[in-house]
Length: 246
Image (cartoon, rainbow, N blue to C red; front, side, top):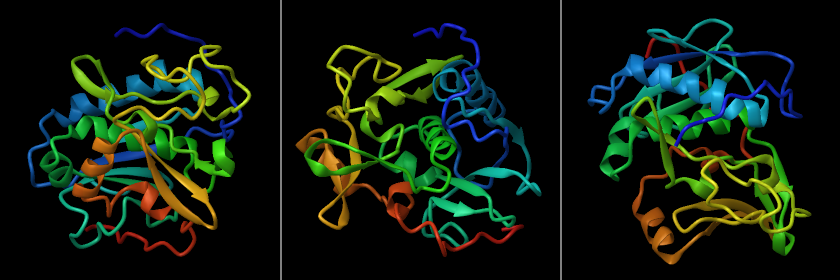
């Protein structure tokens, strides 16, 4: 699937800044993809696919660790190793940090590149994990841009990337088929969850998961989700911080 080059759109989610995101690999497990090529593909994903839709630009920078004043995308082995206790964490400067757990991702048959793309997209749109949209059934749907379509992929320079929803997905007034709801054009209406997806929904005073299929619900229960961003929905304040140099 090829992308059409688009002019930059300063959407409502443009924070008036272009964060630098330090990208570093501390995993001992082979990624299944060259790290330099992965960073280049992720930058192209942002520049040509994601930013024209969401207006959330960022500059990815390969580093060996945290960079002062920068957000971070860290590749680590497992969610339960030291200093990898949560997917969405804070850098030493108190800025957004996403963690990609390589061994855990590969163990459930997923691609590291797709996980990295997924979490990068979600971090840029909702870095504080505090946004939600009123959806069907009096529920509030978390502003996660990849969960509902998380098993749909496309490639950039031969590297698998994650599908992502468009802003129209969160707009209940849209009629079915009246707008583009995701990049891959698999979604036909607002708040539709594909068979391989799920969403975190706040209803009756608590967060819960809504699945696109029973099969997805079974797979979800078998996966190690301790490190997923949705684990921290509504718990942004007081999250455990990472320590530099680990």
